[in-house]
Each structure stands twice: as C-alpha cells, then as structure tokens.
Image 1 (cartoon, one colour):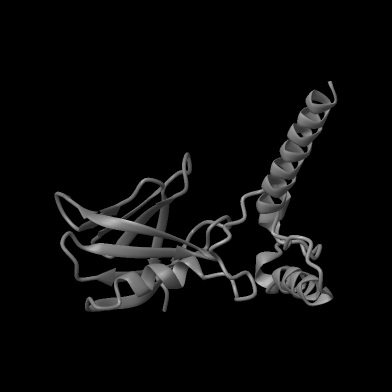
Image 2 (tube, one colour):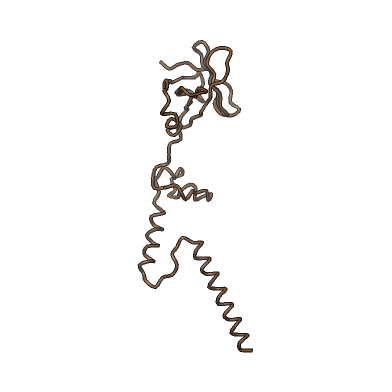
Amino acid sequence: MRNLSRHRTAAVITSLITLLSACSKETTETQIAPSSASISVAASSSVAAKIMHPSWDADQNGVNDCENDGSCDHNVDYSQPRPDPVAALHQRFAANSKRGPFVFTCASDAAPTFTATFYATEPGTLILEHGQNAAELLQAPAASGSKYEGPDASFWEHQGEVRIRWGTGLTELICKTAD
C-alpha cells in the first residue's frame, strides 16, 4: 500500500512539474533561476518592451493602441515611429517616372483640397491624397479625358475639370487645379 501511495505522489509531482514548465514557457519571463542575474535580465527586457514611440499612441494615454484590443504584432518595433501609409504608397512606385504632385481645390467645405501624383505604370497609377489619407487608383477606360478608379475613390479629368469621388457613399466633387 505504501508503494502505491508513493507511486501516486510521484505521478502527481511529475504532473505538477510538467504543468509548471509548460506555463513558464508560455510567459515571456525567464524560469526561476538560482542567481539574481537572470531575474534582472528578465526585468530589464520587460522594461525595454514598454518603450513606445508616441506615434503608436493615438489617444495619448501612454498605452500602445494595439494593446487595448490585443492586435499588437510582435514583429514590429514599437520604439520606432509608425510608418506613414502615404509615404509607403509613394515609395512603392519610386522607381517609376511620375508627374506631379498636383493640387486640386474643390467647391466643397467637406473636402476642399486633394493632391494627385501620376505614376507611369501599366496600367497607369494615381496616388490621390486627402489630408492624412491616400488612395491608389488605377487607370480605367474613358470615352474622353483621363479616368482612374479604386474601391473607395475615383478621379476623372475632362477638359480641365476634375471630378473626384472620395470614400464610400460620397457624392462626386467638382475640382480645379489650384493656382
């Protein structure tokens, strides 16, 4: 009977050790070590992980915005500035020749100015910017003039007048080249 009790105790201890080692592998902390050197390494690496560039904190509360919803990508270095999506679009086409940027003013208070840069790609590409947002539009067939379309924006130039649709469900804006 004592052997059976010892066998169960050994099995329980083995299970606990397995469970504890599995839990410690899931955390980013180092396993308990006999020296305090490994503990200080774990503490300093967790402090380094908390350093964040202000551009990742849109609501300025000191917490990376992705930590609020659990969407953080652990391959991203959050100590560096957030990449500018408009600059990334222009960088993609940097090897191609371009015309522009051209600024257009519209007869609308909601969306007064747009910037357009045309790239010599096949089909032609237009990067249309409004504020901090940008859309990549591809050249589309047009009976006359120059037309570019994308999922949420379009640009159609015809006889010096430009018609821009920006965002889903918005009406067409009539714009002209800014002087």
